[in-house]
Length: 352
Image 1: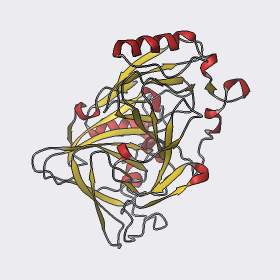
Image 2: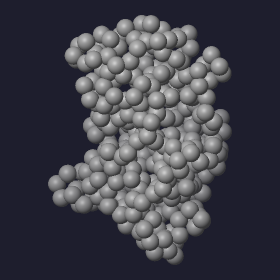
Image 3: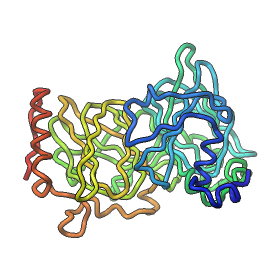
Image 4: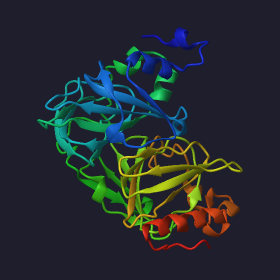
């Protein structure tokens, strides 16, 4: 379908028009309370159930969706000219990936798994459970790709195989990987469970913080994991659009705010999704009695630097985009002290 003429003088983008014709719900706002409970509807193209997620913080840099596969069912084979990162929200299943003329690779996944079908590969997802649906959330760069080409046949039915990214090699989805120590990055194509994946020191972001960057399937997009101890919170910072934060453990809240504007508070728990808007400051708080861990799915990468994030760890006074504890609004710390007191949690970070 050619979207050039239909979008030429419309307030809707080609991506908006494509979403409308897919006929599934579209969730909006700053966050999703529980991805496992998000309403879905029959999705003809996928052969499953689904919902798009258009959160304000995505801008036009990326998009996301939820797909739910009924028990002992499978999606239709798909291929498309955009990248995606897939996190399994619930259930167990398997995925088969292949290019035209290559051997198929099949691997099994579970709740907590993270993987990515390489660009424009054929792929099909299977729910191996007999009684429960399986559900995943995916981040894609479909919006800029569809908006740029404005031709769905080119994006969704392109026969080109990127054999430099995937050639059917044995073990592609074995879960093996390697750490690039100088960049604090783990390179792999499949992570069986990000909820217990090993992390590294991240104290530049906050007291006791740990984390690691994740680069999958030679993508331009990337992900990272961060974790904060009980009674702590990271320094506030800002960056470009599209970082989708999936809460993996713990209960807490976040503040989003434009410089000089009132703060927006978002409460979250495991399964919540939130996306800070472009260049809004944001800060995440753990008044819980256990560590908080989240997975950030992002439309930019660390290996291929679409956006330079080096300043997000630097003090805003010296040209960075991070607010040191002593420079933040004192009310932020007082609110946190109150939230910890409600839960009987020791405050382990100072406002200095």
